[in-house]
Length: 108
Image (cartoon, rainbow, N blue to C red; front, top):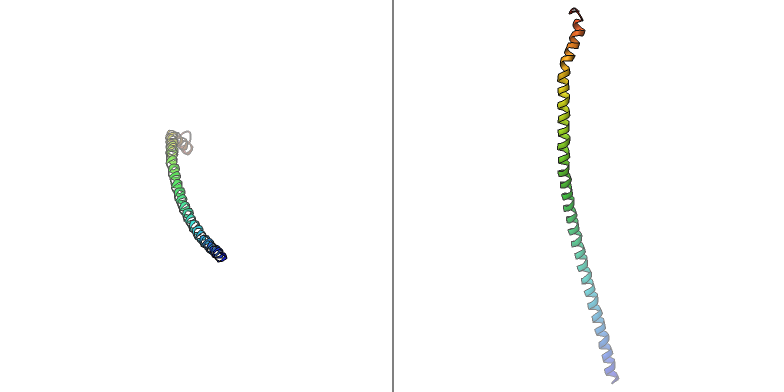
């Protein structure tokens, strides 16, 4: 009877050791799987971040086009006004220069 009890204790210890080994193997596998998932999630997040950055950049460029067109239009209008004013004052300037060169009575 004692032999049977000892035998069952030894078998139980052997099963416990085997269960422990299986648990360690399973834990290592779960850890490896978790690391793979972590890496996959990191890559996915990185790609998503790049995509969102690109979309934000494209939106900013699109918004700036309207501002650029507005500034260009204003600059063209200002330049046009300056040209018109210069054309109007050109005749006055020519007369003033001729008056200085020729004098009041047409002689130098």
